[in-house]
Image 1 (cartoon, rainbow over the protein chains, first blue to last red):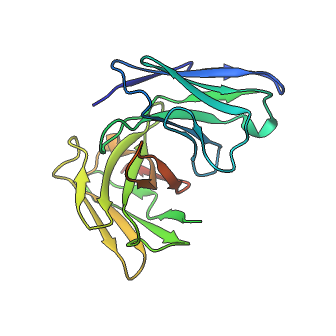
Image 2: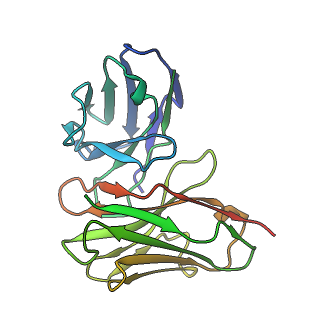
Image 3: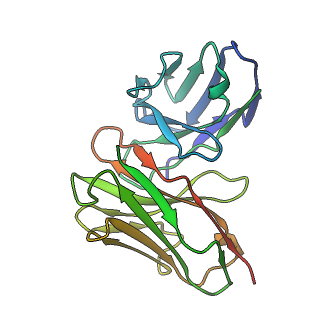
Length: 107
Length: 121
């Protein structure tokens, strides 16, 4: 299995802030990584595919990037609806695919 | 837009069988090429891939659950199901059903809201 280490485990921020969340693998899988947003009581939502491709309907304040074995999700100008849990998923090979531990973004 | 919804008992006794069903709406379960997947999350842990059934009917299971798990599909009801035998407290988790697309950087583009299953006597 390809292990993904996601950090931080939790993050406190304010409306209008910019935050970054990181997923790191032990080998290069660039750009095979997806990001999800999970709001409480809702189904998780795929927001970024292939490290940096924003999914349709996702606001442009979300962005993804990759460098070597490190992948970053950046959210600028935080909005109230952005406070949620975010997790990564490696997509380097056919299933099963592994997930990061998740980052809880709190106000 | 495809929507998924899990259903099944929220409490299962140890050694018994956990059974969950995922009902798919807004699209046919046997259209296209997808992996219809079960994923679970125990408290404080990362999401864990449990297994899937491909649109073709081919199944694949987590190695750690092999021998206890069955995933099946009922195209007439547009549903797929999870059966997990001989459960223990370690199987207590929120169980999600999800659709994974194939091809480039395969991700999960539709999810259910999750169903909490507790294994306890």
